[in-house]
Length: 210
Image (tube, rainbow, N blue to C red):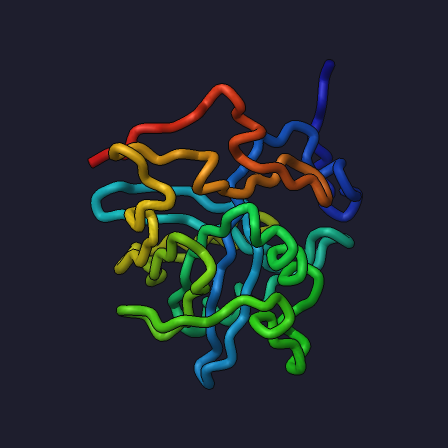
């Protein structure tokens, strides 16, 4: 089988944009306008790009290319404030993830925290609210923005981490149990949401790097 990615983004519809797309862990990016109004965006286009210092990269669409590729309000907000939080949801938050992706922060009447039933919480360093229901929250400050085609790639240093991993609910014998942490993955295309431990059934646990 041969698959050639369309170069004209406007021609891409539905699953055509994901001809071969490995499962990616979904995160909820929270950010806040300078006046304090918060926003939440579900994202799978993110990665760790450095361990020391811990640095992440997040891709956010920068223009209106098609029905599935349109400007993200969080891109506008993060460009103005230079900070955001990576919140890692568990499987129990799938409905909340969907709700956050169904509406746009460009509508000034939209309150995604209220709409999704998620709870804002205080951060240690950044002014952005974290999502209390997420077991891991990474506070991030942008150090560079790289335009890459349809997306802007935000490179950010993780300046603080808040986590419930060691509450006894997710860590057992110094190992992360995937069945307990239940991270959510998006396995390509529109509406394909899977649980990580179902996607990788042979993995019962993974070592935690000290």
